[in-house]
Length: 163
Length: 150
Image (tube, rainbow over all chains, first blue to last red; front, side, top):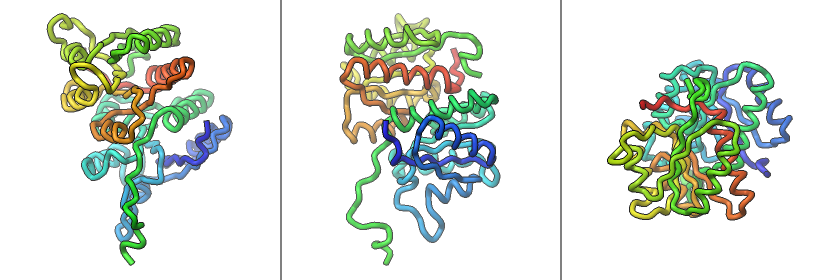
């Protein structure tokens, strides 16, 4: 299964977990691109662009968002709330957001689903399970699930409409 | 806490009118690693009756996961999805759309209606079983499912 052209956006403030994540996909010969956002604000910039350079289609270049709930600046549930409120504004084109976090508190789980996370995966504590979980998760969402199609190009790129 | 951790069987509702696909799904899940109970609804109306525990389904358990075909008799899968996601008691149950439709419009419409996942059924038998196993491996072993009352 060729997923080399796909991109995961990993929202993760812990560099150790990022390193583990990269090792896990390398071990499984999954050669997709991985972008990292260290906090919720950075994640928002990836998805929506910056104030003076808004993206026409949030997250169009991303195939999967993996969201840690405990992040600085804007936490995972706040990020989901922003995405949820953008509903109706092309939300159906957005990349799937999978919560990947250390908490499995019932309240966090149900809130995340209510706010539109497509699934919720608890980070395993042991190294071996962590690697297996990452591999299965990535293969499922990039290889088995069908992502929503991007919006059709309307003949003009963002740059050409503003110049 | 997920059902698995509590040692309970995972309740799955399969909404599918094609007997061949029902049989294959049952077989694939039966041989799987995780204890599960599969209820089958043959059309959209039956699916909603089971979910809302109407009539003969009064004692039906709330499913932890729904596998939903789109093209169904009586009530179409898209309508079923819309009703599930508009119902405060049902909306947090993950819905995996599992259909032969490859149409972009169906994919978009499903996500618009808050489907959790969209999978096109492979025509090939072995591929089909592999896909059901992948669904099982992901949703029944990795995922923390929301707590559903009942």
